[in-house]
Amino acid sequence: MEKVKVNFEAWIQLLGMVGVLGGLVFVGLEMQQTQQIAIAGQVQARAEMAVERILAPIEGNMDFARLLNTNSLDYENLSDYEKLVATQIHAWRRVMLENNFYQHEAGLFAEDYWEQSKARIQNWWNNCELRPTGQQVARFQEYLNSLPDNCAN
Image 1 (cartoon, rainbow, N blue to C red):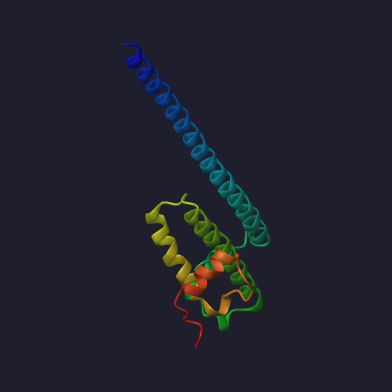
Image 2 (image 1 turned 180 degrees about the vertical axis):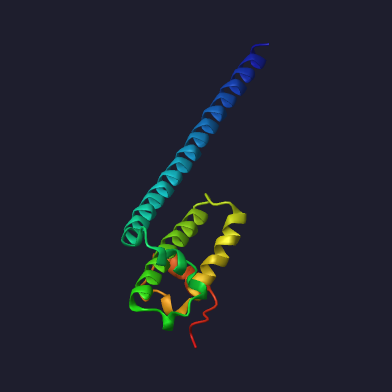
């Protein structure tokens, strides 16, 4: 009988250790998820600040509403002022789309919204007159480089 009791105690200890290890793994996963959400929150906050800075000069501007659809602009026939507004709108879109890209990469963006955002990124990137000349955030730039380039001609 004594031998069975020792075996039973060993099993109880083993199950206890497995339970503790399982709890530690769970806590580690929760911490990783919390960190990922915190980083995404910081990316979102930076995007909001950038958007505010870009949009502030054109607040209350009716040309903004008229020029909002930069995909159908006749850019060459715009005045210098209208070109400036269109450039600001395009920069605003870049910030929003780059943020969507990061949120998707972090797993915090629903797949159906990502499909819609991919189409918007492609349209934004294909606007040759307004395409930014500088580098974007590296991962976003890699994504942009993978897109078909209608401006290469």
